[in-house]
Image 1 (cartoon, rainbow, N blue to C red):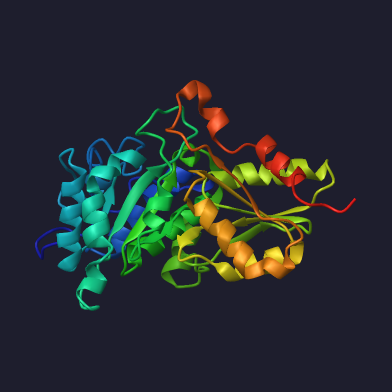
Image 2: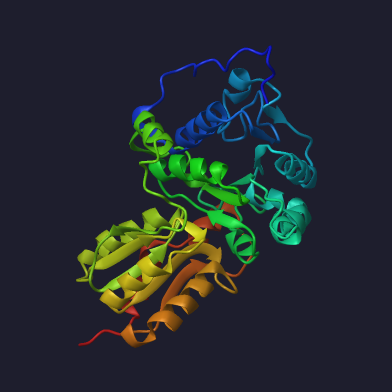
Length: 351
């Protein structure tokens, strides 16, 4: 919190990006805008201060807001999460960064036992408005501990929201929503999307968000491509793969609808159900290993809620049930256009 004698926050060093904008820049801008809008917002974690984080998502924040609001911590994820709990209980809105997906595992006792349960434990008297940022999944040639898809673990834990944006605009708006949420949010950031670019006007997005004109992302899936033959349900980095598969499927005579879930918790059953009842077929695509996963849960929900509208069993394309492989084998682990098209071919079709 800024003291009475401290100067006001200086303006950003550079004009905010307009035009081709990276996923990373959208996240960085969202953090800066949230910190500017509310003195209670803090950003901390391993190497997020002067370095700006391994992926430079926090670049410039310490210089702009000072080392009391953006600072480095020891390499102790449990301590980072525990400190966030205490801060959130006392009126702050901490945002913490777990350097890589699997680096968060030492913090699970804090996350699962305290962050997720505090609101219920106190009979609604204590809420924890905090965000856990997690660089997520594969596609960057990493190895174990650097490329896990751990979203199923957090989604299985009542009391946590789970967000996974797939594009630049959603990266900005969903992070702003997460920071403003009064409930804890695990915010997954697909690493292979960080430096891809899309057309976006972050200044306009800021204005839309802060004047409450932006479409709500929390609990709202999005139909990215309309189709009539089958519905692909996906999220995060798998969205771009699904879109490429849908375009390739046209040459094989299939018209595929693609839905980006955006928030796994809360999950938008209504949008998915409406699509599946229209197309009669569904395929879930996700990088997570398939067994006991988000993918298997979505398959079950679709099957249970839309059984009498289905012309074919619901299928899924996921990562394999193995530890994340070496960079040489990574491409075989991740969902691909060919694997998606094979799954579509295997659906029940009338001759």
